[in-house]
Image (tube, rainbow, N blue to C red):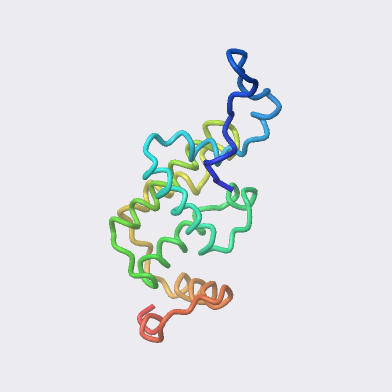
Length: 160
């Protein structure tokens, strides 16, 4: 998923008789790859691609179908993991959330995710938001980490 090197339409034919790939070939391109490729800067493409892959890897999301169904709970768990386990800088968290927000907006705009879905709306609100520190959320987050073999130090585990 999200390999911007070979999935976009390319000219076919030789000499002056070059045309774009057929519509059928274009329809087979995953929308996530289109989203990556439309980013103007190569650095932005790489960073956004890594950020979405981080989201998927952290939450054990195996493919685009699961990615498209991620909800606000997944975004909250990811944000907290970055903040509390990875101790990521606020700017890193904001950039990662911005990448995910951009992807979900693109998917909604092109009919590949439900409009008004919790995940893309929450992402924008999450940038400067701290989820409530309730014991229920903490317990679920700890269970989530343990079930996905996240190796948090005992110090981090004690602080949550």
